[in-house]
Image (cartoon, rainbow, N blue to C red):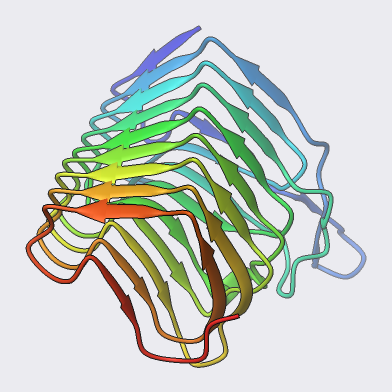
Length: 220
């Protein structure tokens, strides 16, 4: 499928319960081999609920985020997570991947030429993510940014030529995150930045404008 010049590419809301007016969880969906570009107004290529599956989709030129997955309620009531494999996010005004749900699995995805590559926020009770072999490059700010999130595992990911940090684990309540065998190089600031109780093992950082690896808290 191809979607372009629309207010949003794929936009899936929850189901409204007429008796209470509350938004209830909708049905998870599967998206394969779709191309979405020039999304405006709602400003997102994919905006769906947790529990969905995304494989080999391409989103570009969105005036907001390329991919955005949010819970229908806060805190996250979905909890089953979404799965991303071989997707590409590029040239979006905001985030390549904007994640606000728990227990995501992301493998072999690429984010470039957006504000942030991979952005994980606490607003949706974000934790328990597994990121493996993803790549972020040429983004205006950070390649991978995790804000006050917990118990995430990042393995064999690469961040290069980003304007800010390669990897950032920010927030004083951030804990239990593990970075193993990740690579950061030629970023505009520090390669790998950790400011709380998280673990780093076997990661490489070189030719960054700031520090190679900067730690400002307790590291396991």
